[in-house]
Each structure stands twice: as C-alpha cells, then as structure tokens.
Length: 373
Image 1 (cartoon, rainbow, N blue to C red):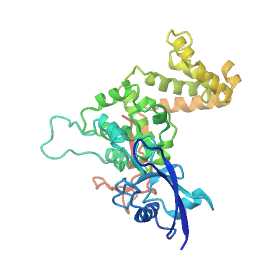
Image 2 (image 1 turned 135 degrees about the vertical axis):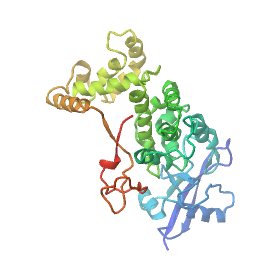
Image 3 (image 1 turned 45 degrees about the vertical axis):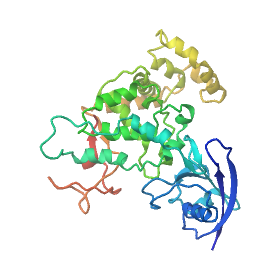
C-alpha cells in the first residue's frame, strides 16, 4: 500500500500563528485526501477539519490542496501526489479569503454566507400568483440549472483574486446565486436586483474576468459566466447606466475591438469615459497613471500602442465585418451555458416533455438556443 506525506497547515485558534505539520499515511491511491485527514485526526484528535457527506455533495470539506481549492472528499490521493510531484508532500491548507477558526476550518458565515444573504437569495413572485404552479419553459430551466448546481462550498470565494484586493466585493458565489433569481421569469424583482448590483461599487463590475472561480468550481457552475449574464441583463435588458461606469466601459470595450481589430488598452480608458476631450476623462487618467506606468514597464501596454493603432488594417476590417453581421441580426441568439437534450431523440417531439439531464452530444442549437433578454 503506498504511503503519502501530508503537510497540513495548523492554527490553534483565530488569533494564533499558523504552523505546518507533516504526517504520513498509508492508503490506496484512489482514497481521498479527506480519508487521509480523517486518519490523521484519528491519531491526533486536535486536528480540526469540517466534513459531512463524503460524496462531493454538501460542500463542507472545502480546503486548498497544493495551493488550489478543492473538495477534500473529491480529490484522490494519487492525483494530489501527482500534482505535488514525486518526493514532495501533499500540501493541505484552509480556504483563502475567509478567516481561519481552527486548522482547516474557516468562518464561512463571516464572508461567504454574509455575501449570499446580501443578494436576497429568495424569489419575489410575480403577481398575481397563478392558481396552481408557475410554468417555466425548458430553455429557462436549463439556463438557471447551472447556478442551482452550486453546493456552496466556497471554492470560488477562496480562489477569487478580486476578493483578495477588495474584501467588500460581493464575490462570485453570491453573484452566481443572484443570477439564479434574476434569470428566473417567476421573479418580479429582476430590475431591482441588477440595478442594486450595478450601482454597488463592490458589485458585479468589480469582477475582472480572471477565470479563477471557473477553475475552482468542482460543480461546473462557472460563476464568472453568471456574472457576465447579470451584466447582460443590466446592460441589454434594462439599459442601466451605473455610477461605476461599468455600462459605459463594456460598450467601450466592444467599440474598441470593433474599431481596432483587437483591444487597444491605450484607447480603452478614454473610450470608457466618453473620449479624450470629455471632462470626466482627465481625472480618471491622472488617477490611473500609476497603473498605466506599471503596465508599460511590464509590457502589458506596448509603447507603439500608446501612440498609434497597430492592430488596424486587414484584421480590424475582418473583425468589423463580423461585428456588423452580428449586429444586423433582427434578434441576437444566445446559447445556454448547459447543453441539454432529449434522451434517445435528437429532435424533440412537439409538445414533448423536456429532458433534464445534460447531454454533451446534443446540438447546441434548436431546443438549446434562446433569445437574449
């Protein structure tokens, strides 16, 4: 039976200094990191670790394994050792962006659950209520099913770079939960929800599209995509021009790419604030100079991009033609994030029942295509 060395980050209480402790366990490679932690706790009852179902359903055992958030019951020892490298210990730490209560247990109520409560995670029913049940079409059910797959493990919160910079950021898990209701046609408060999150300086426009929450999620919820859909509801659905300039920035981003063929960072700030002659632009430019200088020094922005438009030309014209073709459609098409199908029938019968299981072989058009709100 193979032996695995675990390097566990220990902390006696909230105020104590953390320390590391290495221990070896002998378990089969298919056994989980949680199994190893339970074995270590059997030897040392002071080791604190949270778990419940042991089946990757409850989300209780979220930890960082080799620096990345995961469910301890879902991560196999063999896979964890391969990630760590031969001869190196498997590093197990508490999740990030949340205060540590003891060892591997973090205070999720102080961060994760507080942010979920902030987005009003309940339905505000459309009135008048029907005599029986609300009937929701298959496309919409598929659309919100992805957010309903969240098990509230906090992995995305642990991995969020925006939360590291801005602890007041609403966060990926809470914003994904917000879309579960904002995207539900039975909810009467869609406008109020998205306006609130658009106007909040720590709301949905704080997300920087880093994909870290997408990588972290063990259930494929892809919180970043749900944040994008929230923005789409606010921008396209309701035309909310927010005080954080998020609406103008997104429009400027699209226009910048259309004009240049690809993003030109030197123009983006000016485009977002109405052009170089707009009085709102100069204060923002002065405030952004330190970041601009850093970006130039790190070659994020090339000097040639600051004095011209190096991407214009054939590439820009091709992108412009694609843009105009898409914009000329009478109504834009939007594909569901989950691909759904009908079992044993590639073409759903008229009036047939909707299949609930995800089917990767099903076409992404037809029953899965929906019109954007």
